[in-house]
Length: 369
Image 1 (tube, one colour):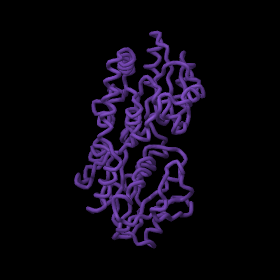
Image 2: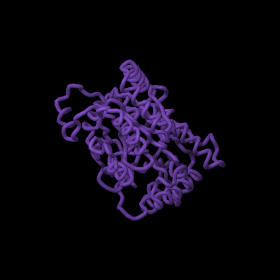
Image 3: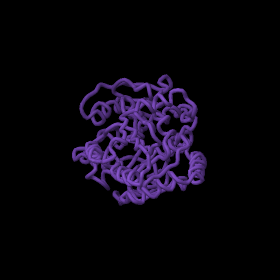
Image 4: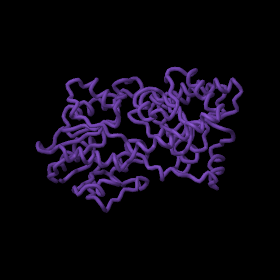
């Protein structure tokens, strides 16, 4: 089968869950199938993704406005492919009639919480996702929560046209020498001098960092000598979080690292006393698995797909309740037996997530349609 893959996400500098998802499957498609894959992209592929380029037909298309709907769509006619896979929530409106299509849906947060997005982004996401959901041959949902949202917002959608395929995880990539020479150098770089609570992800409203800040402040009032380290680059509306931080009495103990290298991420995540993902909504939540691998206890909100990913291996809290988060933090900070139990359960939980299995299941979707 000839399969074309929308791969322009590989040209981006910022690393996020969607791009990790695409790159990990591309490291495996050729191993588990004999299909002929062509990757369409529009620039230099970010070497961080480590794509085995020689295993694929690479087609670099000119950067033009509305790339997916224009030059990408045009090339679908000239290359005579059997199937197009869209790892993003988009689908060309003009495409060959016989071309089958699979679209991966990561989340519908923009429908549930439109005020947490820029208006122009909400409009764009609705425009592209609505069409893709209603017109794709088959959909892949990255979690049961995402499938549930699809059926809620698109009631005419047939359940059999949705396959749930979880993200995988590479435990070996996250192993770290606890005595690493550069560990102290990295902690010094970010001015980390105390035990700390760590968050990993973008800085934007849906991540709900204000509630984490409030819980941290309550701990500080109780004389906990801690720092809060938020690891990740600014995204949309990041100024709201930074403004809240600037008004805090404890702002000197709140550190926003911005984007970091993979080694820095591993050191920061493995050095934290506890990892918190307070998001209002996530389509999946890869940082939870990263924390499990780094042997850091996990606290996550009980919203969206996060309980599905945590699977009982971490503490959950109401994302609107900073006092509840504070209680969970205190419990983990004070009880070593609980910490050790959560760490052990987290490591065991990782056995449920495999990129090999994700890839095989995705290929199975390609084959059955």
